[in-house]
Image (cartoon, rainbow, N blue to C red; front, side, top):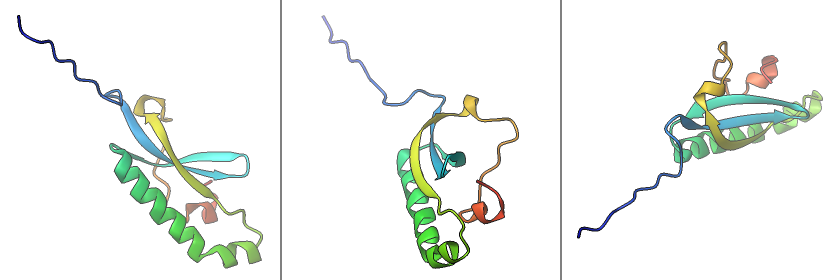
Length: 94
């Protein structure tokens, strides 16, 4: 008899990785990626952009966003969702 090989995936087909921007109680999906590595790279880049503007944000009493990643299903995105620029929160994006 032959062996049965079972392949397991860590994510469902409709699941992607979201970069999430959190400012106080407000949370917004900044961007969506098909792989965790892509989301991690974007999250790191966004965090670097915020760090570069930290003094400006604090001086103008603008809440500093914190970025993280999490699994996200595309089906759960609002219809009008659009990706947020790294400093989009400066224009009321978050």
